[in-house]
Structures are given as C-alpha cells and as structure tokens.
Amino acid sequence: MSTMVAPAETNLGTAPDRVASQSNLDVSALIERSAWLRKELFRMVIRTKKGHVPSSFSCAEILIALFYGGILRYQKGRPSDPLRDRIIVSKGHAAMALYPILADVGFVPATELENFTRKDCLLRMYADPSIPGIDSISGSLGHGLGIGAGMALAAKQDGRDQRAFVIVGDGECYEGSVWESAVFASHQQLGNLVGIVDRNRLAIMGPTENLLQLDSLEEKFRSFGWATVSINGHSYREILGALGRIGQTGGRPLAIIANTVKGKGISFMENRSEWHNRMPDAAQQEQAWRDLETNVITD
Image (cartoon, rainbow, N blue to C red; front, top):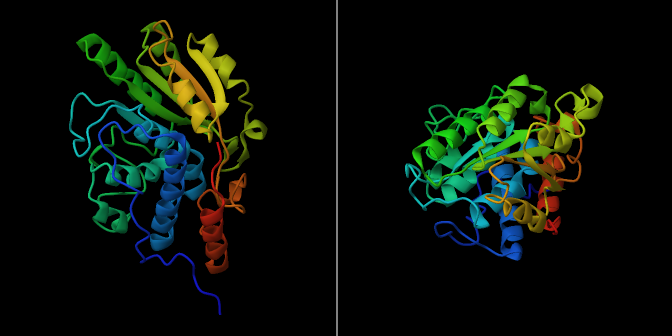
C-alpha cells in the first residue's frame, strides 16, 4: 500500500525564515520561497478539497517577487497601515495564493490557514477586504484594475507616495471593464499603477486564443497609453527587472505581460485546463508532492 506523501494535517513548516518589513531577498532565496508557497497552497487544497491550484501556481513567482523582492512597501504585522502599497489579485480563483504570504508577514494568524474555506473561517475561497491585507473583493472578474486605478488616483491626488499593483488574469481581459480602466489610468497619468497580466493562455474552457484571441496584449496596453513590457513570469530576474521600471515611465501606468504556465510545478497539471478546480486523487496527490519536492523553479 502506498503512503500519502503530503498528509493534510501534517505541518509542512513555515517559510524558511520570517521576513522583515519590505523584504529584499536575493534570487536564490526567492526561489526557495516559491517551493514553500506551492507546498502551503497544495496542503490547503488537499485538506479541504476546495481551491484552485493551477491558477494560484501560475502567479506564485509574481507574488513572491512583490512581497519578498523589495518591491511592495509594507510593514510586517501592520495590514492597516494607510501608507502601505496596495495589491489586488483580480483573478479571483487565485485569491488563495495570497493567504500563506499574508500569514507569513503577520497580517493574518497562521492558524487560519488550517481553516481555509471552513465554516465561519477568515480565509474564504474568494478574497474580500474583511481579511487583513486584502485590498479588494474578488470573484466577479474584471473589477480589480479599475479599483486599483482608483486607489492610485487617490494616492496621487492626496500627495501620498503609494503604488497600486493589480494581477489580472488573461481570460479576465475579455471583460470590457479592464479596458475602460486602462483608458482611465492612462488619461489620469497614473504612474503609480502597475497592471500585471498573468498570461498563462488558459481559461476554464480551454486555450484563450481559441476562445477569443487576445494577442498581442502588450500592443493593446501600449495603444491605450501604457508603458509595457513582456517577460517570463516565472523568472525572478525578469520579474524584478520589469518591476524596476516603476517610476520611470514618464507618468504612464505600467503593464507587465507575464508569460506563465498554469499549474506550474505539478507535471500533470501544467497547461491543462481541466485541472482548473479539479481535485487530485490519492495517487495524483503523491505524484504532485514528488513534483513539488523536485521541480525547482529555475531562473
């Protein structure tokens, strides 16, 4: 009889070490955190049989880079700090990707990870601002970029040195509100707004280019007046290089097209739309855990 490699009730540990405010780790340490985040997310899903692994895994390096790569400005344990940078995971299925990070930086109790999606829990399937560190509700797609634009505009008008970062799903770009927000942000010259498109090229119903062609997203955002760059969304060097353009766009908002792999890190989930919200069986859980132990993200 085989033995489950990643028992749901086993404590797989916390991040390699606690972060200081506005952490600034090197690439090797960021890669180590990638492995930690994926294991934490997988354990949350297996424990409750709820959640979206592939959508969360495609944006893992983006979130790690923002929180631990010296980009986001926040203070550990102070989610209510009015001056911290704002972050919105607009692709609602990946809201859970934030939860282990919020626990690690002291915004929510780490014990809440054990209660993910359970009755009366703090951490639900979709995010909302009742969760410390969550800046916008998610679930209905297409709203995050507009909300982030509003936050960036408010900061600009108030003279606050504060930025808003919004992770948008590529399938989410089917929503017209995304492009209304793009026009608004350009018109308002929101150089403190960053939109990061998780370009994994898969929606729940199949490849995005078969459902409704989106290419070239870089050209589209540029035509709306944004500064744009296209990168490998799993390469920390490329992610941090692109984010280093913040404040150097001549007042234009910055769009980063992050080319990613849905389900990155688990071999049988990668680039497979049918795993959008499907639960692996016992044998698949074992295979997934072996993958998470051995498939190190390289830069």
